[in-house]
Length: 288
Image (cartoon, rainbow, N blue to C red; front, side, top):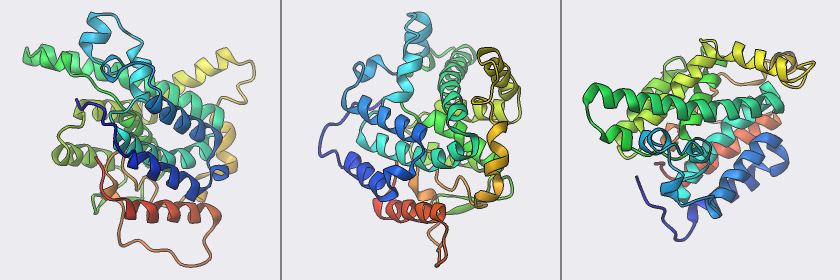
């Protein structure tokens, strides 16, 4: 677990530059609000980092369950925040426009909570299997678990596309798993179990019962369900509005960009935004 580094805030400056390059008016409201919340809690954390990270020891043994809410929204340093938020910007613009703001907010809230719970279950299971208490004491923080869940969802909508993971072309169907392994190899300080938890939550939604459960809960809470259910937004946006290379950006590692990709004139407004993001990231260096 890294301690927070206070220095030049270069990551924050690059994130601000990225947002203004895309244009705040072009970012859907839920995506922009979640980005703003993460930045705010980095600058003004709700608690010290070691009191926001989530672990079996702190959440289950000591009963500090609020960490499930705090841990996804706090980051170890400005680079950690930068790479997570740029990745979220890419995924959020696509998914919010496809699903609609209310359902996307509902989805983010559910993914954030479930990713933490699955992480705790995996760490507790490893503790029992290996009889090694260190798994229960490992404390995770950051938005990357949620990003992996969103990546599974994005790739689910584009199963025939190709994602570039550290320059390697990988089918969208397997991209999350390949990225999970490569990030663990190249950045051993990242949370393998936390990322795996995100993938499993994404699969629970795309191939399991989670989506149906969420829709049923939304129907109970709202009388009509018009603003909550994703189906109301599918017909208007559809998959045709998105290129087959969706999900090209990784959750953590910016080397997943395809350096050979190029665009010519006649781009739509959304494609121009995507190109702006790619160009900025290609100039921004590597990730965590």
